[in-house]
Length: 489
Image 1 (cartoon, rainbow, N blue to C red):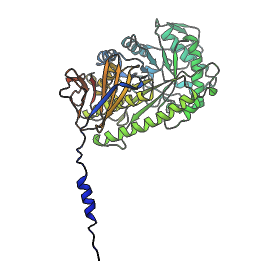
Image 2: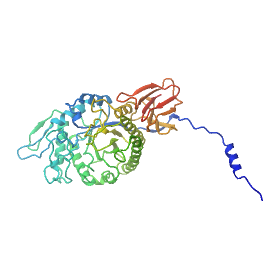
Image 3: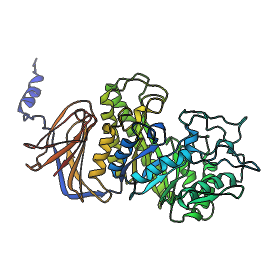
Image 4: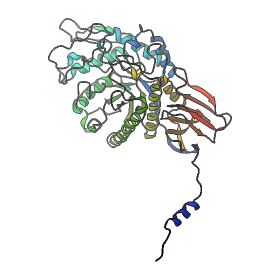
């Protein structure tokens, strides 16, 4: 009886295998191989609240930061938690009196238009007067303009189904800011002296949440408002949908279908939003780094789906994804925020900017310039105590300064775990965007670097300071946790 050593051939085969060392993390770019041309502009949102008001201790610094960004397509939203700062007519007219008041609305609007002079803006007076909606009783609001209420947006049915009240209101607000004034319901002329150019006007904000407006009603409201405002300013482009949730395609299928619109109204642009959030209260930052990017990537899948709907039904219209950020907790809850969180949130925005650029999205807006305790502090781009820009602000500035519509995205090869890399060629020359999506320090090789190669970065070491800068020596790059860097070649 024979016996065989069955392991011997296996051992011999293993012994004969070549020794393969682990590849060194490396990024290489084929600068002459264009993958696509960017159609994307990075920008931000500014929401009206007490900390951006002229009396705020950080007002001047905030608007200096905004001006320094030189951002196109800033989205400015006077919003419902502060009715006196968001609504120009808080009470319905009577037979003898009207109640128009732009005291609060004017001052912040002026600061916005001054800080963005020379750049297109997107204006959204999103809050309709509560008295225009059917409610059990009149909706109360604080007499103190700086005291918030989360119960102003009541009612789901307009009291005037013809929508004349609605369109007259927005027509007068629009005339106030673009035509120098308006004539009110009783024939009295109100003069503002404002003649702002408003190239983009967004119709309402998150209608799926605010008043729970279904797609047919929202589309009818959009058409009524746009029809009137186009008479005043034919060159203004209008942005619609602006939903908080992208999980229900009904809004997009209905609104983008030309058959559902009034004759003469063409959909020019759409918008929608995304915020990553922890999976549960108290989730650690170490765990959040995975959760936030997973939720962002799930959102990107929905963007691809929505883009297919848009291209099928309304290929002529542009897309503004104009609220992107991270929310840790409800707006009323305050508490300490880990400094590394701001870098994680900045890296997340950079990741979304890059991926949405690859999809051809027109505008990618970070939310929001100023938040503070009781007003989504975790979404702020500045330190609400001293007015300094945090990592989220400086990441946006890094992107605005280095990447532009018309840049060529070129073939980029990387084997660096947890790091996104993309080469751009444009008016600024050759640029490599690097995003460290992990809370770990990463070292990599960039063989194409020379003695003149510079890296500019926002990371856990730069804090509330402008991006750091260093020369790349020996073709080696080190990225700190959650770093966003631009290599200039």
